[in-house]
Length: 166
Image (cartoon, rainbow, N blue to C red; front, top):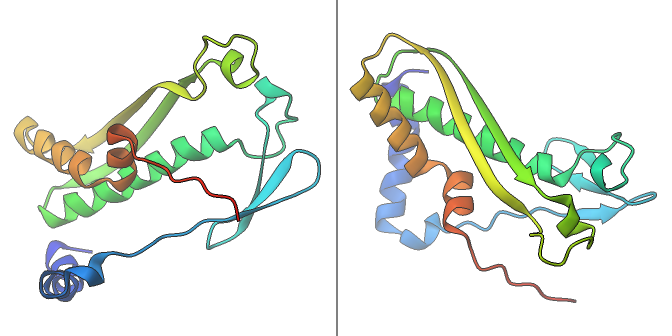
């Protein structure tokens, strides 16, 4: 896909969202259903996967870990955003690899140490780019990718999560 094709795809949407801002607000949903043992099945929209305990918390390693899924979502979103931005600004990108890493202290989630945090302490996102573009253009690509990546922005800014029962 080239930048003019991308613009043609996005132009009617942008125009609609300018004239009807409420049309741009879309609620995305995910759900899971508990499974056998300590697992749950998650419908991704394309397939159903089974999530379970990480081996560091007693899992057998056969189910995907939700922490891994969070990092995978970040890598996927950053990769798609990087490619879309590169296309939009006519950035010549031969190839790219997106790496995510996160540090967890499992003492927190296992209640071994009440002072240990539950959740990722640090998350790192790294891009390896194969391009001949100059540094200034690379900096612009990364800046725009950071700005428009939904998962990156959600994780870096934090959000209020409303929890209900019913």
